[in-house]
Image (cartoon, rainbow over all chains, first blue to last red; front, side):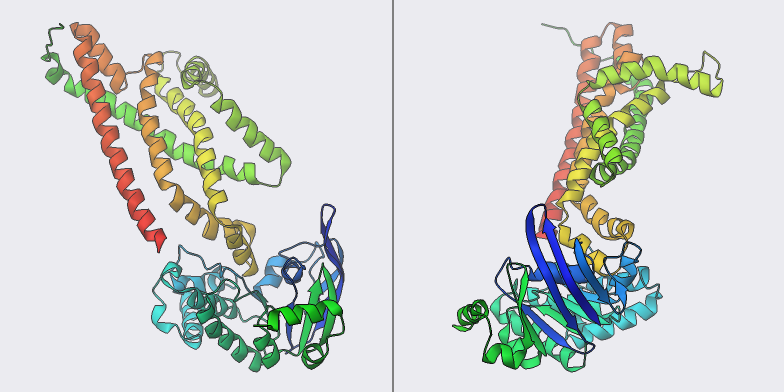
Length: 242
Length: 229
């Protein structure tokens, strides 16, 4: 589904990604973790072309992301993305947030888009909030709306860029519950997150990144059982301490 | 002590009202055109296409570095000739109002473009990422996501600029155009009551601008309350 081959990226002389290679198969859930500044968010943003990269190739469902001839907008319309800071559109109601791209990008009619949006809103447990604006919802609720907004486009896979790291602790679980459910339904997912409980529960593989490189790419049992690299061991020891 | 005599004002009100209409007309045209052209300039200035960005920056810097009264004077001297040449007009056609409107609009768009540019930049980058991630084109992201938010943030500033512009329309007196200020001056000059007429004109400008800025402030408070939660 997603294939990343020898991808490198630099800002000027600063190397952000070095020779990253990995694959995500259909239905797989991959968790990407690593210290801050390790390039994990940059890598996931390369997958739908939000960040350009200078070397290597990424293909999503057979379409090359880095190819200048690729219609990136079209590709992105089938690749769902959820951001750290939700990025709902604050000037639109929740319903409009859920329908705008369905109408303007996919060309669905109003009623169809609305039905789809409200069904997904119900699924994330927020049907009662359809007429509200994003500013009236809590962070956890906004992130659930953001997931519903991405799902409304019928994505072939979902990218999550630290979806819970801007949330208050008591709201993290409501978002993770939605993500677990999605994973169990067989959605292909690539998640940048530090939620190791989530990783243990649903991940097929865990990728550990450090200094722009993929240091470990292993099944979750192997990763949590006996990380091969010293850096991953240290990282796990730090984040699992508490 | 000056001996005030206000008696020439009541009879002059219809003429003064005609002048006020000219002032309001210039203001309205300059605001509408200034916002449209200003938005285009702002988008050029933020565009990755270097020549466009340079053109917009040059335009804005040029107009912001010249006194308005000189711009008006140039337009008063040049535009009538250009218009007459272009449309084959009778040399006696009065194009002073048109040239004043063009001068104001071009001048104000430099200021509007700076307000609009700041407004566009005030919208978090993540919003464009989110719009792009949903498959929107750059133009769609701008039109549906960025500009509506930018304009909502900018409305108070745009209105304040319109109030300043309304006051500045009095500068058209350099072209002897009878705007509100020009009309008041003419009446005062005719009746030998310049002091009274100018005081009256000042009071009218004050009343209108003060009331308008109070409205802007109330609107801004409402806006802030809406954004705060």
